[in-house]
Image (cartoon, rainbow, N blue to C red; front, top):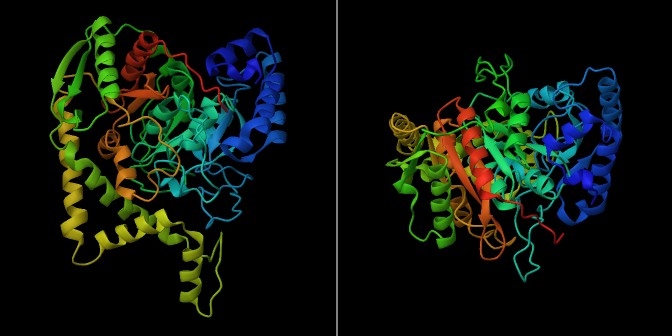
Length: 490
């Protein structure tokens, strides 16, 4: 791999600014890296080398005129959930076929406005439904990490597995991702990368293929905390095309990295100390507490009493919204169309052939909980639990400035290990779904390795629209952790 591909986003931008290399050279290095290893990892579904080199050349021309933009010349990957004008977008599903959007998602439009260069579209769980990237219609993504003494392929996490694997394997400087129940943070934890799910409404959902509209939120996966701050500043912004987009100013998030955190109060929720938690994760969590205490933070035990109901509530609300959102995929207007002797048969065959098993499972669950006679017992009750979870956080944030938890209940596990047990797979989201239900920002950063040499992450949860505090805390933790391990077996 080229030394250029090993750079962080911020280091690459500095190198471009100082003239050490050009955007074309940087982009070519990443294209060559993708050509060399993507067949092993299956991270990219579509590559756009000609478009990337053309954009890089335009970036070099702007920089020569002194008109460089915030991300000018930075090659990034795009999760295949974001519509890209003229470039195939599938959401990891057969039902979208070879759909080529005639428009651009707001998040990616913001990135191109700021000079970023698109290398291609990244693999993902089908319609973002999964925790291991094994539900993709195009095959699983392989984590570039391997356990000590083993050559078994591991999951990169999901649903943003392609984004996380590509960043960890230096196949892009950063990547867009999305998080409905942990789909940015869990893959970041599994691959030794940084991922942030911002406050709901911080990034526009326009042009994102919908899974669960009240939970979905875009965010970046990057190599460092500062990189995540740079990406999020560009991805954010009010968008009148999204009715849930917040009309608030976007801060310079990178300015928060490196700030003192002395005097901040950090909550440690007792309900997250769950039975059967691996000792390595419990020890890492305690190490994170000590890093923040050493930086001058005050540590306070807090209670989030409705945590135990979060996962059941999530797996009612998310499938309910999915069953509504995915009703539009009927084989009529775009995507895969099955054969049939009647309109009903065409609908049935298109959906049966186009959707994968996990998507079908969640549509059925969602339709069931919304059906007459069950709506009150399931969906309405889940909405009430969601309100209680939000109130738990409101009470906690009256006492503390941020909350520290593990990101995931384990390190990356082998592909195929949990595929036949949906409940075991769903438990991967146990520490992350609460922030989606409450609409709060959550950031995962790599904090150490387990006994098998695999990365483990810690999660910071903040008040709504207070991503800046998370970046300050994460910067301190990143420095204290000193995480420099890299995957080297792919």
